[in-house]
Image (cartoon, helix red, strand yellow):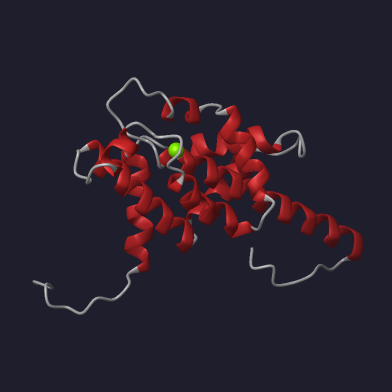
Length: 185
Ligand code: MG
């Protein structure tokens, strides 16, 4: 059935699916983001497992604000790759201009989802650029990942913050048998 005239209404399931598909299409797996989380968190939680890291990355990716940022950033990368943006934005994105900075601002909307402790993690992983971040920063191929590298780092940073909040909750539950409820985590 043609739904050209159907009034617009948000389909959250489609947004979530599109987020997953786009990340996958751009060569980013949940496991690779989870590896970044492990890099960030293993010194604080030596018993942390990859399964926990993956679970936390998935929880971050299920948030609407995160999905919106992923869709927006990857779309701009794709348009830049296809040469479809207006100059000078086109040239700034293709050359990953250091003084542009909107890629990082967009990533902050992801980092923010679990509070300001994510900023430290984001800054750290962005400087270190381990694993997938090194690959996304490789400028020698035709791909434009100006937004994606920050998005991936931000998802890992947010997942790390989620782990930190939840681990604290566990400690408090064990100690007091109760915890502050409704952290919305
Ligand atoms: Mg960038």
